[in-house]
Image 1: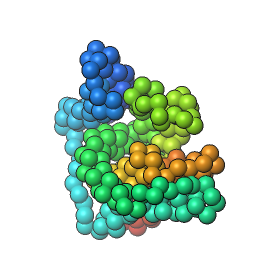
Image 2: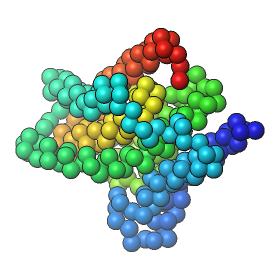
Image 3: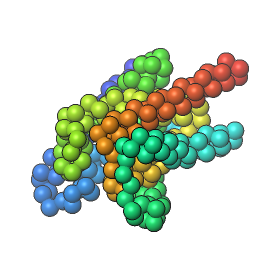
Image 4: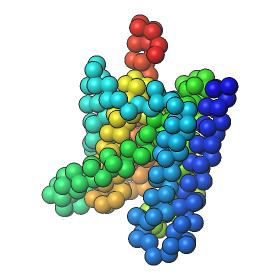
Length: 278
C-alpha cells in the first residue's frame, strides 16, 4: 500500500513538473509587466517542482533519501570534485577551441570574468537548491524505489529534467540565444544533454547520499562555462567550435561528463560490493 502511494505521488510530481513551465507562461500572460529573464512566471517554473517534492515527502513522512545531510565524512573528495569539474572542462574545451582556431576571446575577459563568475556563484547556488532538491532529492530516489536499473534511471530522470526546460526554451529565453539553433532544436538538444548530465549528477548523489554536492556542481556550471560563453559572450565560438568545444553543450564536454559519471558509478558499485549497498 505504501509503495503504491509513493508511486502515485511520483506520477503526480512528474505531471506537475511537466506543466510547471506552462503555468509560469500563463502567469506572465496575465501579469504582462514582467522583467525579461526574471519574471514571476519563471519563478513558478523553478519553484513548483521543489514545493511539490516537499509536499509529497511530508505527506509520506519520508525524508530518509531527501539528501539534506552534508555527509562530509569520507565524501570530501566528491565535494572537491564537484567544485572543479566544470572549471576543468571549460579549460580543456576552450583550450582545444583555441588550438583549432574555433574560438575568439574578448579583450576584457581576463579582467572582468572572475568578478562576474564570483557574483554568479551565490545566486546560482540558491537557485540550484530548488532545482537539485527536486531532481536529486526527490525524483532520483523515488525512481530508484521503483526498481529502475542504472541506465533507465539516467534516461528517465534526465528526460524529465530536460522536458521541464521546454517552456524555458520555447518562451522564457530571449531570441538572442537562438542564433545557431531553433527553439524546438534546443528542446531536443536540451533533453539529450540532461540525459548525459544525469549520469554525473545521479552518481554524485548516490555516492554521497547528499544533494549538496549536486547543488555545488550545478552552481559551478552556471558560474563558469555558462557565464563565460552563454551569458556574457566573453568567448565566441565558430559553428564547429559550438558543436565540439562548447564547454556546456559540446561533444567533448559531454564525453568528459559521461566519463566522469561512469567512473563515479564504478567506484560506487565497488564500494557497495565491498561494504554492502545502502
